[in-house]
Image (tube, rainbow, N blue to C red; front, side, top):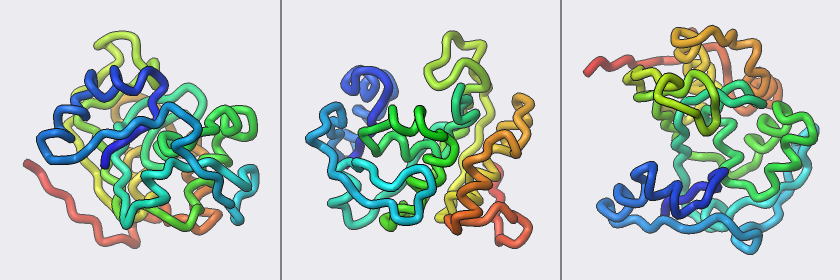
Amino acid sequence: TVFDHPCDDWRKSYANSGIEEAAKKAGATGVPANLETYYRSVSIPKGRSLNTAKIHNAILDSDKWINVPVLKNHGGAQLTISMKNYMGIVWDRGYFHANALQQCIADICTYEKKPVLNIFDAYRLMKTSGPRGRSLSDIVLSKGLFISPDIVAVDTAAANFFNQARNMPLENVTHISKGQELGVGTMNLEKLNIKRVRI
């Protein structure tokens, strides 16, 4: 099963992104996320600004799930990476924007059913005008792919990578440090066994 709760019409988003075609070729099904009935309310006991959220049934009913964001600039959160991508599995995104967005992003990542892998696509990153973009001048062909079960670590690496394309200090993306404070993962990349592959 493949799904996202995009800003625009889900059918167009799936088709335009190539997700629909890739899912079909792999034998997967793209499911909608545009109705509240597709979501169930869950408790976020470790949350500081967010105590409940409606999460898509595809996540709640899955055995395992994999988080696959595209690296891009975002007006409110500064960057969309793995942690911010959780907003694609929830219904009530308006609450996030109205109630300490960066903290809510960190809070939702404390939910007990975490992705087994975070695979962020930085082949083409959107350096400006995110999350939708306005023109090809917003895009940098960066040719990167980052994979980790540690969502804070992979987002730390992603933020550092993005900073090479456009000045975006890590401390500006505060949901990452807030996630570390909540015990979601680590920002200390030096303590990790990182494998770098050039193709």
